[in-house]
Amino acid sequence: MSIDRITVIGAGLAGCEAAWQIAQRGTDVDLVEMKPKAFTPAHHSPQFAELVCSNSLKAERIDSAAGLLKAEMREMGSLLVPCAYDCRVPAGGALAVDRTRFSEMVTEKIRTHPNIHVVEREVTELPDTLAVVATGPLTAGALAQRIDALCGGTLRFYDAAAPIVTAENLDFSRIFAASRYGKGEGSDYLNCPMNKAEYEAFYDALIHAERAPLHGCDTEDPNVYEGCMPVEIMARRGPDTIRFGPLKPVGLRDPRTGHRPWAVVQLRREDAAGTLYNLVGFQTNLKFGEQKRVFGMIPGLQNAAFVRYGVMHRNTFLNAPHVLDNTYQCRRKRNLFFAGQMTGVEGYMESASSGMLAGLNAWRLSKGLPLMSPPPVTMMGALANWVQNGGEGDYQPMGANFGFIPPLETPIRDKRARYAALSARAMQALSDWKASLSEPQPNP
Image (cartoon, rainbow, N blue to C red; front, side, top):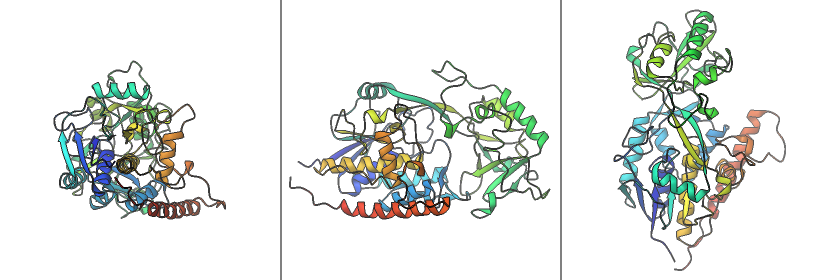
């Protein structure tokens, strides 16, 4: 028997993709979102698909893991990928977006879709009807308790966001525009160069700066996700850790000296107009006053005006291999699908891709069709397989990477050529798999 209406809980990136996949197939969707009635600690905008950390969607080229994932999503009829390209800002070899315009565009497309019905309320119970749960890693309150009880205990880690400053308060006599190795337009980033003495003074101030207390955490060094590690925690690993990490000067030369700086802090454009910039790699949990003091030591930022300080928050995710299939269906309650970062995928597009598959499979279940997952040689399929099988007892959030895609039958030593071949194989496999989805619907 066909089900004519599906619920999607949460209008983040995963929830919007899930709702879009269902609605595009002609089935009505109730998209339930608690904003603007309530907000999580990391959310500030009433718009959907809000980017709460970086505005970068990672590498763009198809022979990269992140680029392949976006190409696969576009092939599958993604809502978010075309919106991202329409809202892009210069970012070298990465796809970065004007976060406000991006959220506004996604919200407008969702709200005007004839098959999507937005319901503004907070959900406190897991539904008994067919639903996709995409409430994000900051799910809290009664709903978090229900999920925790159903899934046998959730896992937690902390991540952080970087500060954003205004362009008009930067000292451009100390800053130069350039991309590493001239990628993109060649001047997509603003670069704040440091000599050895400036770096050492900044480093000393950074590792001794006062950090903000974390609610519900009784240790100074909580379990942090490596991809969003606070810069002050990274710096404590050694004086050269950040100089070979977010402050690495490779591929850059200061036009004032003609030499490579000792260290470089990069600023990436936040909006198309170039009025706002974020400090790349500067996720932080320093107190706000300390951020202004310490980051003001960066050349060119001595008078910086912060429109958003960096913050740190707790993220919760499922021990997915124990409770989810690679279709994102919950084994313990088959009417439910989970999507987004709460499944243990890491990254904006990774979360959105899980929403696409969860929405597709919720729709297929509603029509009595078999559930499906892309081939494991695709990036979407590899992520789904990680959710079902990953971790071997130590399940951790995972972003797109070529490491968990099956190797080529004929090995290729050159990494760039190997990744290009893996990407070509993935796109062909996805095309073949997509064609297999056009199955006739069973009689009611």
